[in-house]
Image (tube, rainbow, N blue to C red; front, side, top):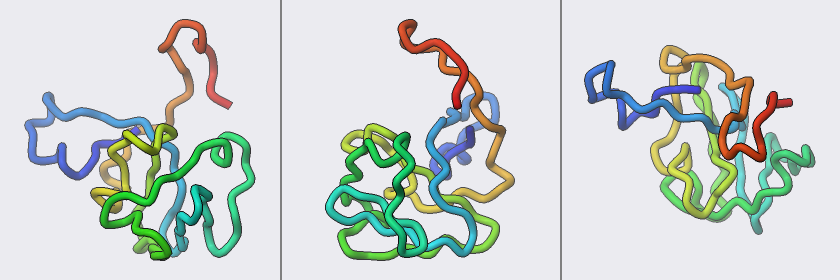
Length: 116
């Protein structure tokens, strides 16, 4: 969970918090190609990530463009890639904007449970 860069301009009590998958940390190289995600030159095979099709959208998600995550920064992607506002559009998140790790799914009710 983190505060995305475009929410930082709001008063602290009005800031939205996002829950997305952490894909890369400082020094990692991220590439989206043919719907697949590559980190440091290797295709991601973790089924929680590989089951998603990653669309090439936004400044940081252009086709055939490898992104290097700056030191002390983080790169997040949403599972619903076609309609997710994530690091592909606004870039990187500094550690100071990370709130914590999500541990529970509470919506929709049929998916309630602990996150693996």
